[in-house]
Amino acid sequence: MFALLKKPVRRSARPLETVKRTLDVGDRTMPLTIKENSRATRITLRIEPGGRALNLTIPVGLRHVEVDDFLARHDGWLKTKLAKFSLDNPIRPGGRICLRGVEHRIEHTGSLRGVTEAVVVDGQPVLRVSGLEDHMGRRISTFLKKEARRELEALARRHAASIRKPVASVSMKDTRSRWGSCSWDGNLSFSWRIVMAPPVVIDYLAAHEVAHLKEMNHGPKFWALCKELCPRMEEARRWLKTHGSQLHAIDFS
Image (cartoon, rainbow, N blue to C red; front, side, top):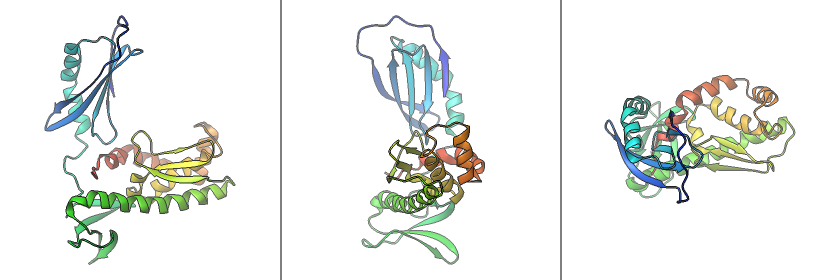
């Protein structure tokens, strides 16, 4: 995130403006959404998780030339931040994708029928995908969702049993702002992309949301309980901070 302090501007009665455009950053053409905010007193630039798009929040009435000047001055910052996101999409025959932290080579079987499955061929992990090549991303994401549900539901219910709290439901989503959530009535939700992370990270995410069944906050008691459920919590948190955005960057569409 990058921000520039601005003086408050005079508010108008007109509807707040939202503009969608693109911005060239090095070799990338990025979708850019510019939104006016009546409470904003500065320009705020955010990169969406996964580095797929940019969001710019501006004070009401800010001139377009000021927006363009801000973006031009922070071109170097954007290039540095976006450099960690590869332009090469791994979802293709011969590409590589992780399952529970283990890198698998993607193999298109060429058969229109069959299941997507993780196998070992000549000692090497392989993800075999059938169907049309154009449908590869959808078939892989469906496989990952099923694996994530199986893994996270088992972990969540095991952790919940240890603190004697019921789990009402477990659902998989493709959220960008957070990896999981817990409602007051015991519904747990997880980003299925976490199944690409190492097992300790998956376990931590399950423990984190289950801990909210008892402590609906992020206070000291919550973190103590979270570490009790997942002793390697700090290791997992460091992994997510370093590598989590790369999981969001993978395009399965």
